[in-house]
Length: 66
Length: 283
Ligand SMILES: [Zn+2]
Image 1 (spheres, protein in one colour):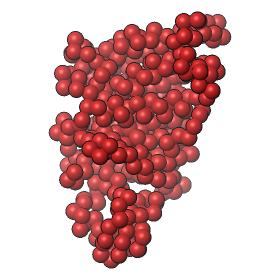
Image 2 (tube, protein in one colour; image 1 turned 90 degrees about the vertical axis):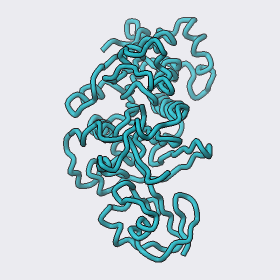
Image 3 (cartoon, chains in turn red, cyan; image 1 turned 45 degrees about the vertical axis):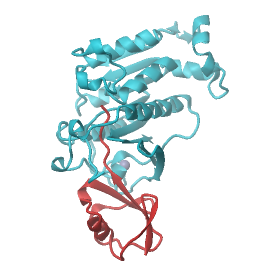
């Protein structure tokens, strides 16, 4: 199915947000995940199933400033 | 606190020189003489007088902000000069707040500068923040970014958050209790073992100028009460692609700070400030 990941359309397998993070090799603790403009609680990553057309945002920490 | 030098017996009148200096502002219908007076009465705090704080300080000084506060416990290091344009080569080894104050006042003697040569902590944050209208985040570590977010919430002060890493930057404006806060999106600092330090990560120097000047723009808009603030939006910039991307965010009812059942009810130091800077898995 197709979803939008950080603004770009992508084909992904059916599954949960946690599955998607695993395929992308992203450590769940290093990212805030938004699905359709709503931030997911980390405990819900494994129980949230993706649907066709979902907008997924992986928001990485950006900490510099000096 | 020293009042701005313009406030003579409580009534602010611009001299002819000041009318000239700020004429390009005064010409703008959205600013005018009235707006310029708002700027002249405003008090803006820069937490960090480094990469982001440098361009913000210079433009806010040029704009005629009444009081600029600088918090920084560091001295200027040679490795800072690649991006921290508030400091010059002869400043290496000197306190950043002092070097910053000199540059600000050389640019615009109308501006009062308050120096805080200390680290921001849960112990001093509220007292300092209480004296300002807007806070600009220009720090380089997550515990400090969370502390600034929390302190702005408790002090009820608008915050212009910024971050830079490698070729990417991010900026967002937070109006406590009205728009999404940093913890609404990022609940807590990342685990220290997983983050690289800023020194390891590197950053293209000009990025500090791009993000820091957007932060200054947001601060001035807040002071003037004009336009649409960058609230409930993260503005991400990628210098390699020269591309901005806006990500909608919203207040999180489960936010530990500003949600319906907050678990953070007082200020605390959230982790070791030396722990790390930022990370993305394999950019
Ligand atoms: Zn919040």
